Length: 478
Ligand SMILES: Cc1cc2nc3c(=O)[nH]c(=O)nc-3n(C[C@H](O)[C@H](O)[C@H](O)COP(=O)(O)OP(=O)(O)OC[C@H]3O[C@@H](n4cnc5c(N)ncnc54)[C@H](O)[C@@H]3O)c2cc1C
Image (cartoon, rainbow, N blue to C red):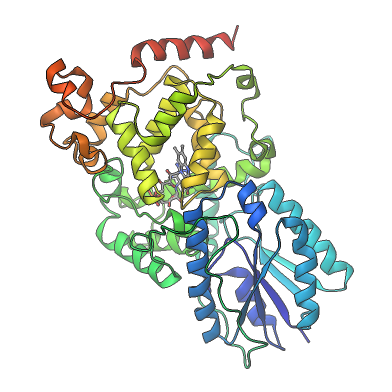
């Protein structure tokens, strides 16, 4: 007779949840659900308050969904991951659960926590079952011809597509869990705050909670924007991307639901047909690629560079530059608009993440880890694998990184991705009155006009800092 304890983590949804689905199917004495809040651990992982708030709101929505299935969601709080095994054993004992089900996570601390939890349950004679959820292929399942983890995206992507063509069921979502005959215990009241996080200014207007909301966003994106995704994805002033990253990161929607949605919209095709659909799937593969990197090269979880030789770089320590970048006061309008978008909305468009991260690590030559941390502390979709992958790409320290000599010019990037300056005008209102292309480079305007603006001069010279960065990277090969 089985009564599973279903442990929710980064999978805050009832539909297409492999662990929940299996728990509900094999239970014959009901299912209990639990979520663990770990304030101190979350702070040490630089989790953004806006992300904590998003998690809490999604827990509330999840609890309501689970109630419809007669599953009570319990909340436990332990300061760090160290206390999780004990707390989970406690709830399992109290509610007479004799099995533990969860979906796997891949970061180093999370894996250590899960090993401790597994040992505690197995020692007590309880069964532990874990499931692949964040990826279609378990990290390590796709390997190179020399039996290694892939460290380059394009061959990884080819292998991923081949494997999915050969086993299309991998992307089929599982649907909803089976309703239980009766509820075991009662759901806990959902917390409205977490110790040490200031949740005063949540952006509920931008990021509504719940899997129904996420499903609706996916459907709308697929119907209205998927086909034009490739053409529109690099223009931040238009809504050309899905903006599903917060939902994917917290597991409010699954990767399978996204991949299958795109395949269905593309008449069952995976790598041909709609260029938008094919390109969108390739972005989802980037997400999975970085998860695999986390497992194959765990040093990246420990703030180490993927390319170890780049650890010899002596980064600048300039705190004024760091502050100007964080506050969106660098004098480069596109960089400043992007950084202010992050502070105001908890999210930043992908092209802009690339621009500001490259500006940070190449023009300012600041240590990419500081930028990575600032992103984590402010992003609603902060995800170690994707964030680290993106930062190491921009800093040319990672897998598949941007070649060190190809350094974006923020002004040309600005003209390309925000041709009419609409995005800059929205986030840098002090420049809203500038007409025409001058908006991309106000420092090139006549001195009199420039001095009338309440806007800083560029904090660095692009050409000179670019030359210097190239020298620094070139020296690594000597
Ligand atoms: C410096 C830097 C930091 C980043 N930090 C994060 C982060 O913390 N969390 C995060 O989810 N993404 C991160 N990304 C990747 C990407 O910028 C965001 O996933 C994307 O902007 C989210 O917008 P969207 O949901 O509209 O994406 P869409 O364009 O609609 O793409 C769909 C999904 O694919 C995934 N995806 C798209 N591009 C990438 C990519 N380059 N790498 C990995 N996954 C991708 C995301 O899950 C995204 O939601 C980062 C990129 C860079 C360059």
